[in-house]
Amino acid sequence: MAKLGAAVASSRRRFEADHETLRASIQAENESSKAEATARAERIFEYRRVRLTRLIEDQESWIKEKEAMGSDRERRVLPARRGQLAKNRERLAGLKLGHEAELEEIRNRQPGASATVLAAGVVVGG
Image (cartoon, rainbow, N blue to C red; front, side, top):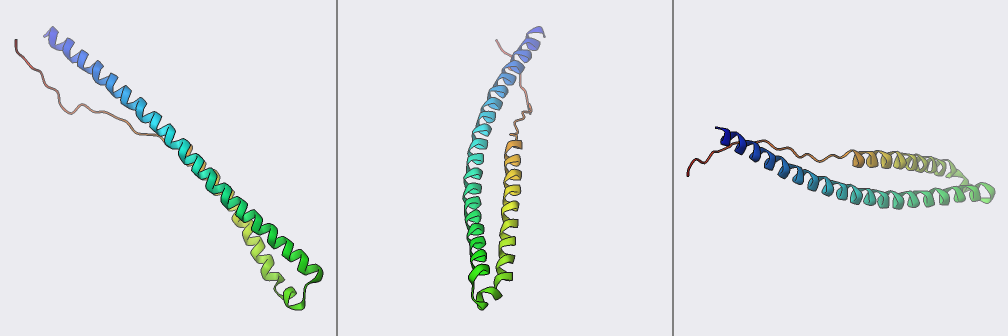
């Protein structure tokens, strides 16, 4: 019976070592995946931020120009243009908040690695 106990203990140690190796591998893959996801999120955010910022700058410039020397027709659309400008500013602020939330989600990703012994067998023989 002592041999059986030693064999079970040895088997358990081997199982735990294999599980730890697998867990470390999954953790490394997860870190790599997080880095790729973060880089992708940064690229997308930067593209959208630059695009919205340029649009806002163009709209501000147009509004200032037309306030200074626009025709009556151009001045009539100023309220609508100001509304578009306000909406784009809101979008830019929302973009920043959404980006921070996405980065937080990426940072919080945790891989799952668990192991359960489903069966065990003993070979008796000589």
